[in-house]
Length: 562
Image 1: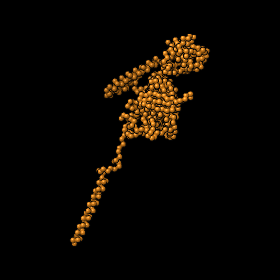
Image 2: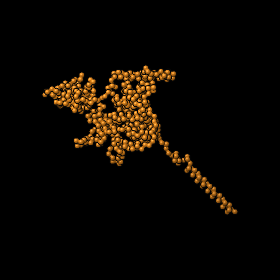
Image 3: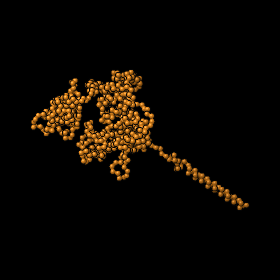
Image 4: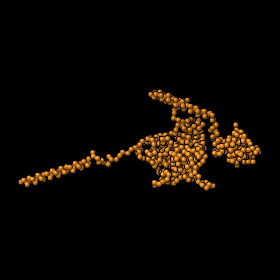
């Protein structure tokens, strides 16, 4: 009996020990799977992505705001903006931002945004980066529309200078694109005074714009924009990106980068041009910018021309702009960046699509023409009465509202606008013949039987001349004109010698008309003392005057221009 009882006690003890072991195992498993311990689920271990707000000023004067991942590259933001604009031909456009020195910089699409922005605010401007030489090759109307908006802004800001005739023509196409055909009942007699299409807009210009606009019948907005672009692309500063620099002599110049090459400007005149095929190499070192030129037909060696920029960053910026324009317009595909650790120079290469690739991609666009609303162009947005003051409805509205100071502030603004309108009227009165002179036939074919008139003038930097004739109606008509910048040696001439140089250049320019003419031609100049001695057979000519001796077949009658 004792053995049986002891056996039963031992069996119970073994069962209790098993239960304890199982309970401990379950507790251990519960501790391992408990969410309050160190081990966490994969969902809770992932970090939330950091975003950064951005603001983009668009070409229609609106702003697009949003948020983007902080580690995003420039191309990601560009894609977001173009998707918002419903723009597929986006390679011609880009985003600009202002650095700490308030200088405009293009956002590099291949780099992270946070590495390019030195300030905390992500503010950008959507703009045209590569101006297409032939806008008619753009596939969609919406692309041409945004290009028109950019060109209108370039004209208003003065970056794209225009003549009176071109201002009127482009302004008329702008009015046609926004208002459609002219309607006397809807538009009235003076309907363009609120529009802004020129930096110094005058009443004469507005009248010419209305005259041209009334002649357009049945022209759609898309056709008006095509005509706008066809005339704008012919302007000399179309698509030129200007950079301040100095030449080897320390003279202030401007370097312009465009689709065709590198342009040199001095005193707003183009003095040289280097096409892309003529340039062998572009480089920079510190604040100096260099171009290596291919030897000419009668040259044996290559030549290098250097320019001085304000600082190292300005030189690098110009170099990058040149690389991007050359790659986009001249190459079929972009060059890959150099690889390896022992690479001399910068690794920067243009990473986007070239114009050739863009045209191929545009040819594959297969979607209905996108419908978009054309925004109103920049205007003088101030409701005015006929006498130039605030309209009575605005006055009544402000008087019934609790807007302290609003009425007085707007009255002051109206006074400022009145002064601007008075100035425009003054310009109209002192220049009554501007429209007539601008729109009359400009150049007449020279008649070898009639006498010529050569008007010359010169300054310390340049010389110019005009060739004209008096017709049977008694009016003097322009036949030809030219101008030339003086070289460094020629700038050392005194006033009389500069006038002689202008006469010499005019004779060389129009020798085929003036030499052997039946009637003597008349020269108009301001320094005729030295010029009058040219016909005298005296040995007292200065070395400069001896170079300007007139040919025997050239006969002239000199007139001093007082």
